[in-house]
Length: 369
Image (tube, rainbow, N blue to C red; front, side, top):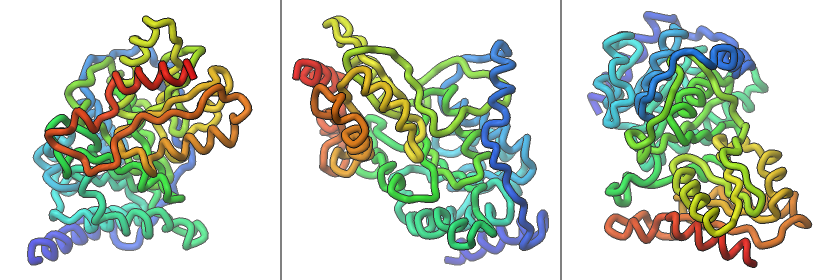
């Protein structure tokens, strides 16, 4: 308790000394101003890096381009358990990149207050499995901050980063995918990238968005996913799904680490003469219904896949929307290939996961319905 109180006092003193108390700054509603810059400089230098390095680049840019941006969380000052914040404290100082007590509710609560003062608060929850103590702060404070004041004040500068999903050996408490909990909450956005290039551009968009955002990072891909990433400052639009593989027989919808598994299934299905269209949702709330609807109207079939348990997962919301908007065009029931309705297992993880073979079998069953 002494540590928490002392650290809290220190943090208040840092903010008070640097910015004073009660200062507010309005946020721009233009979230993709740099997207034009990205398009204009599409041929600029790019390097092949992994996903955690892309996150690190985005955080460097966020801190460099906005003096009112802060990064804080458990162990972030030395780089964090996944090394995403490596070098930030050395470059920008311990008043802008600092550790917090092991208290997720306090981390998010502090971030809400920091953002309400007009700052860019980038809070890290070390594992998404431990975001639940902060649930009240996110749902009842951050999400409702703007609404309860009639837009007189807001905490739109808050971005909450959290590694989510399976990692091969995480067991019950380091493997969960809690995105559906937050998709039920008006007032926040939920974003999940699939690749290094997407991670950097989407994270910068989230940090600069005028609304609080929960940004889930697929920890399985931190080092496994490698791709060309532009070195310059760029943003990718939120709430725009991407068709990453075109097809005509069935639509597959997913996000995050699951996209690579689904793409493997699409490749195998093609060997059997099945043409799959694969869509990365990227932003779960608010999600791009139009892109998914257009694809389903074309193919007449759809499969949704995510790691989270099937019951109450966000795939159920997508399924309901498709039935409402595309019912007369469906050639088969909407299919879901998801995690099981059990706590996340350890030794039985391979049986729990929505694997390539499970997806491939469901693709064939849906097409042959």
